[in-house]
Image (cartoon, rainbow, N blue to C red; front, side):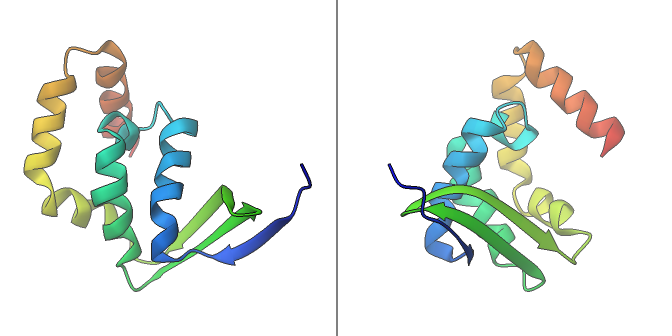
Length: 112
């Protein structure tokens, strides 16, 4: 297969593919533990709606192979957390029996 890698600005229609890459490649990430649907339907759409966001993605033909976001808004994660508080609580209860989940929560709480 020919490598035809190009760099583009992230578009809203790219978010589902970006969520797949995130979920697959960052499986120990706090947001991945909250689930693919959370990443795809809540995290990235809210992130993308922030006016200070700049996102770039690399594509090999039509497949997204990588991405990077830069955001000026320092409170974007707090905003996502506040607006989805009940979802976070539900997912934390649902996943609390997983040792890996507890380790990641602890790490994010003390080093975030």
